[in-house]
Length: 220
Image 1 (tube, rainbow, N blue to C red):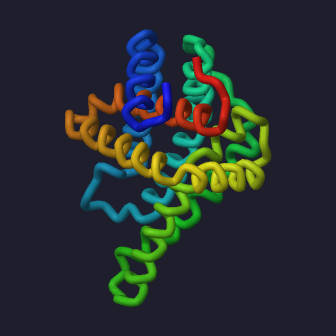
Image 2: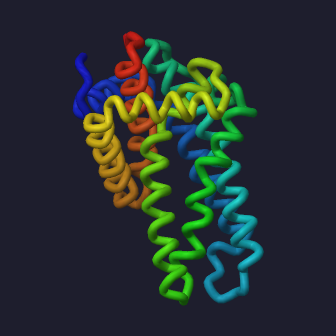
């Protein structure tokens, strides 16, 4: 198939439909663990003074997301290669050192932006909004970083450069795909969150297919 956002989603749906159990199971586990972290660190207590606990919650959420995204990325690439990843594929970390470094860098602007957006000072709030916009742009350009680290054993800096070069060369199609996948996940979240059990795997597989297709690799 030639690359279009529609073809990416179609491919992802076909692969997911043929192997839904491990994807749904691991995605559900991810959601449950996020809920446990939120509950254990006071995230559901709106009246308590939980500033420190919320910082702990944010850190644990980031770490958990990084761990799961490592195995999600591996499984997405496996689907594109024509494999049917089983639960074992979701329990092994790969190239986690560079992956963790990339996760830290990718999270910096977002971490800076969040407190500034809510600041009472107009100037700080404006800086926060600028940082938030910059974080979105950076996230868009670096969205293939994890894929390059897992697929080609690159270091974090090399993977980031490769992602920027690859996305810039395909900025129009990738922007459309990014918006499409974001909209699909919003719809999944609106279905009491249960739709995310399907839309998150779809987004992972579609992104892996786009990466492989647009960087010249052959998807089965």
